[in-house]
Image (cartoon, rainbow, N blue to C red):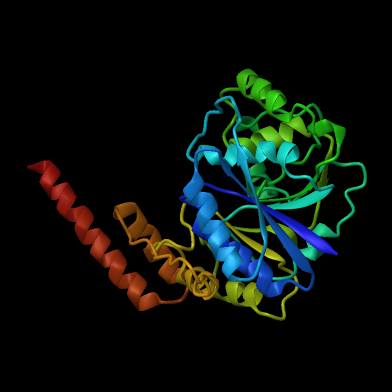
Length: 315
């Protein structure tokens, strides 16, 4: 069995998608064929991914997407909407779409082998719709006709590309955006959930284990990331504090770097802490990773900074 794995990215996410692809290769027990979709004007993104995967002995099928219409991107790159072009470009019956801020911990074939039955998409329940979060978020997204409809995360999608529901997908999504301009909190993810309402299969959480902003204790991370733990197939690092940022949980950053270090044609640098908010977040991450002394020292430094600002405001 050959597994078609699809990535969609711009030049800013190309290297991170390479890291994810490397993790897929490292854990694969089946052959993988990679498909890369980029904007029709972004030759740099395609070249980064193509050169890197070729250096690992992989053939990549590349596609240029032109939506022909503008979607409103909120807090993310507009390239996220390019995944709406996948059914028109990729000539496969079924694919495994994966975001670039992911790391495979087991073979992609385990997700790809799931039977979609008569559904178009297979996906994991989104973090925002966990029982403890759902009340907060469900009023902010596009309403479903069925109150029992589940809301999935689009970071990993098992997708039946031959389903008739894919016809005119871009046009359908544009109409949804125009109808619900104030309900697109999660951009393309909201559109996928609405346009394929009633045609989504909820799959096990192990196939898209979401960690928001690196918030996880050392004991939980050690348990989940242990090589023998088969309860996680894919880690998905959601939120703005990604593993390639210094302010992320150092346990996660170090894990991600083990795959980034295998890049052959490009190099990624960990982005430094840029502001007070990131420093405050990093102090919390140090505490969660049980680096208590460092966390305490940073918090004291932050308190001094705040006190100084207050004094300056009083002048």
